[in-house]
Length: 298
Ligand SMILES: NC(=O)c1ccc[n+]([C@@H]2O[C@H](COP(=O)([O-])OP(=O)(O)OC[C@H]3O[C@@H](n4cnc5c(N)ncnc54)[C@H](OP(=O)(O)O)[C@@H]3O)[C@@H](O)[C@H]2O)c1
Image 1 (cartoon, rainbow, N blue to C red):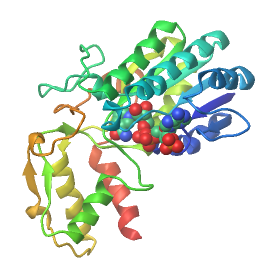
Image 2 (image 1 turned 90 degrees about the horizontal axis):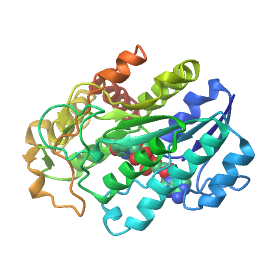
Image 3 (image 1 turned 90 degrees about the vertical axis):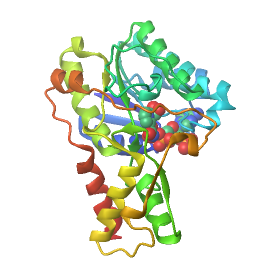
Image 4 (image 1 turned 30 degrees about the vertical axis):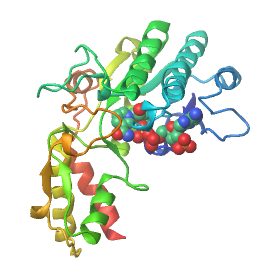
């Protein structure tokens, strides 16, 4: 089996390089790849890559993910998040390949306190959310075999993430204020990649399983509670902190204005995916504890 992976160096793309490897021959590209075009900004180049490599599965982990910058770069955000997935979908249809794509809870308005189901009405608050929704719609409308996995609050142990930022600030600063009215579940790139490999196998065996699914860790938290959890683990590991978990101040979204509006409710209902693929998704603390163990060991 041949798999084309786009966005190989992103949080999820990096982990997919590992998790897709046992499935077959993986051609993993990023925007600067030379032998094949992996730049989602180059639509003819992208189409040529798919035609030349002729994969059985295309996994698109590349995206324009700068949520605030997208407000002033909407054309580029739409090209990468909507036009490029549309090209991938057309090429997948031609080849009868499976297209796997990631989307976001930002397609929802973020109101209420109930986890979003796949069938809930969409109403993005930001250019990023709207561009991701346009990508989903283009793929669904193309008629190609597809899997769209909507996720939320993605982190990876590699590079900087929310936890490493909190650890740094709690050592450097005298106080720390963190948003406490946005709810979601931090979801590890490792988990996303592992589940992706599993569901690809299932959909190839039973194409009826294709479609749109919510995929995130279970449980819920806020950024503030997440920060306190991180600092508790760091204290337990013997790290010296100026700001202790109890000192983290809870603030509302309005106290931290950003160019893009963010949803208050990022909870995703993942029952459809768990049932369809006989999976049991872990609580968010499982992955975060593991990621922290890796960071705190260093
Ligand atoms: N991060 C989150 O919290 C979150 C939440 C919900 C959904 N998602 C979705 O999950 C998926 C994976 O996200 P992630 O967290 O892994 O994102 P990420 O770490 O920001 O990675 C995105 C990747 O896309 C690449 N990319 C950007 N422009 C490109 C272009 N023109 N051509 C080729 N590659 C390009 C980036 O490469 P360069 O760095 O070289 O530009 C980067 O490697 C995305 O679809 C995202 O929308 C993410």
